[in-house]
Length: 233
Image (cartoon, rainbow, N blue to C red; front, side, top):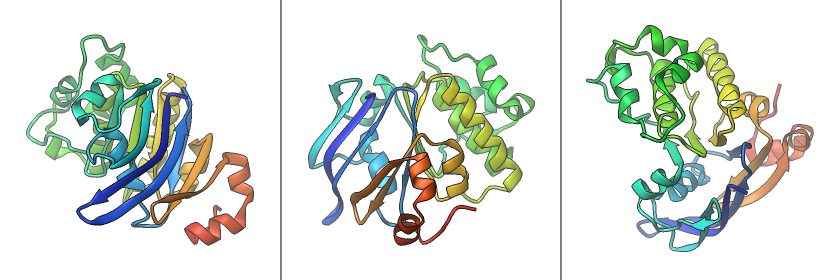
């Protein structure tokens, strides 16, 4: 496994958010983390990324412990986190944003990013503030790729986007997965998740309550209704 999380506990102040979360991601896998609002999905990603330090449990990346390390060190090891707010530098151009994320040893070059995200090539001289929400999301993912991730973590990348843009991003994530990048995805759009994922986890009140491969999850209407309150069309 490229990522192995075992029994992590995380807090915001005195609030005990994660209460023993365990999950894993294999090399080249796309795994989703599902759950209702406030279940602990985003906190799980932030804890893995080093943004929120765990108070208990272990996190191993490429077989080495990373729990409690600062976020910049975890990112340097190859864990790239694209948060929900995207973090695009609005006064810089698309190309400048991408170059900011570049590592010298990264196999990902501007040409690779533009091949996956042709909209970014078209807008490469535009400032971040001139981009649509979908284009900003593409830029945030592209910038993360320039950092040569072995694991890409995405927090609700298609939230609030138009259906045509959602389709584009789904196709782009498939290309990234085909390039061998493992992905841990938090997303509310179940149709997107089931198009992309190899496996799914469901978190409820800070605990993983379900894990299954995509086919098993698709067939389990009881689980989808109980924990997510929705079905998949």
